[in-house]
Length: 362
Image (cartoon, rainbow, N blue to C red; front, side, top):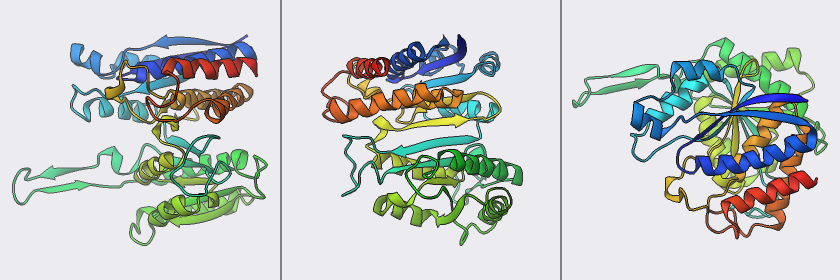
């Protein structure tokens, strides 16, 4: 029986609550499809930092490299200054484990309300591939004359060809395997670059040239498109059915995926993968630790369940991943009154049980 070693980082706030429910669905899938999950939990987060001053110790980082995948609950503690845990754990893990792809499905499930009028699951069904280790988030820059009237702050968007090309190639491959034609819901697979070539004329000139050079040479079967990022935001609201797979840089990807999350029903359903195709990847719900709901049993766990589904898919357990997603669809389409915390008609644990039961039944 195949065994996968999984590092579990429950984290802060409601993170531990939703991770437990994700584990229920994962365990049900493993039992049904004949593999094992060997899970090891780590207490990274705000409470550990308050006690020890540690964020992500070197020894733990080295251990994480040895796992097949990482499942994360949430990072963020109200008693810890913003940025300390995020940079010390999330960004450090992302950069040092070289998780250079952030994969964010934007998928509206049955029974889930969207704020976009007259759009449904057929229209809101696309994926954003975000470059995850470059751009302005690397911290290139600085501040001089701080606190004076002449203070200067600089933070630069820096990309090299290697970073751009490996992200684009991964996105082309993803579009080939998972685009609309590959899924049987369209007549072609499309990869669209989201940039700002009319203003960011150096960085996105590099992105655009590499995009077309790689596409013409190695992926002639993939239709290519381009959107300025501001236009992309407009079409995400007006005509999301235009999209198939989008690829973009770090900062733009951060912004448009949160917009996409709102169109798919909110943060309670949005999951993401931080992927190193040659190493260990980390999967997480993107809604944060939501400390005001901690311990009440009312938080929606489905984003964490969907993160687990993405993890199974990345591990190559396609049937198990599909079963978990079908379980989520069944629960959203037939059980829950709302996706909002405290309004689901079920507790956090009960929602997890519903999904796990659906996965086990098939």
